[in-house]
Image (cartoon, rainbow, N blue to C red; front, side, top):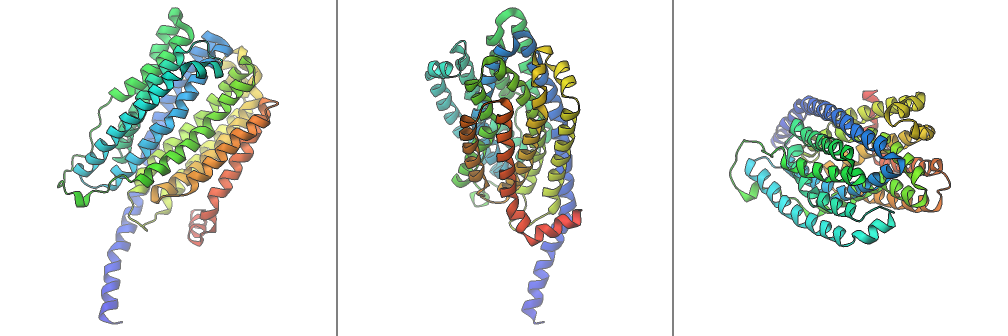
Length: 436
């Protein structure tokens, strides 16, 4: 071996040692972050369920369907929230100094306010046709929605800063504050007799509260304000995030809006309750992804750690199987205890909906992992599938069961297609065998 070869070998050794040494640390951070986010999700789920139980029991299926329609529109607008959160988290994680992290954070916050304001104004101006299309009792509900949307993208930047800095406790607290405010305000105004207005007003108030509390404080390890060390948020990353989350919110919400349009108010309310339970699984899975994403994004180019993907993938698989088994075993008991006798007719739908959600959650883990490492094409694939979902439900909607079966088939196709790059990789096949 000549001297140049020996020097090349010696230069490569620290990289291998560094990667091996930090692998257990990254795995531990993924697991601990996942647990923090899961605990937060439990509290958020309890609060959100309490809100929906109060609204459903007090207002009945038809008015609950109206509240759910507004909540679904806000979920569609959350493509902005989550896009800004993902981009902010990715580049806060990639930058090392306090100055660079803060520069990325402040720049994205300015853009977020401008975009959110434009979308909010557009919604308010179009409130009458939107209210008529969704058969809402008043266009004022869209005004409340506009207020919530005005804060949606800035909240995404705030949460992205906390996520990218691995401040998972504070990140979880923003979701808890939002849910607690929504429940408290709803209890007050719904029981005072404000009905749907009170329930939707509570949603708007909760979004404002989540923006105000807590304040973001990034890592205090300061560095030089050297622009050469800055890794700025790129346009390509922003487009990728928007495409991914647009597809995600369509997949998660278009069925509720189409059911509201094609079915009678009673059936739409029953379906909204089923979707609400199914979303619990998705939110739990997303909390695991939230912990994985910044840790994976912070890895150096070419540096891989199987546990950064396998740990969240196995956690989500275990949660999905447990959730589906629970809903298949005791749907009538669950629906009676949570929503009351008026919703018992929806019991046969719970297991089906949870199955579709579980399949989709596994696909999201794979897509998010790939996005954390590079600009990926899976977001476009998901967007195509979401469009097919809207088209297929628009054509085939004879029963609520048929609507859910369409989702199961398309989510299975999505999971298979996003799994292909991993399954074809010899490296990943070996890693999965080692884990087994």
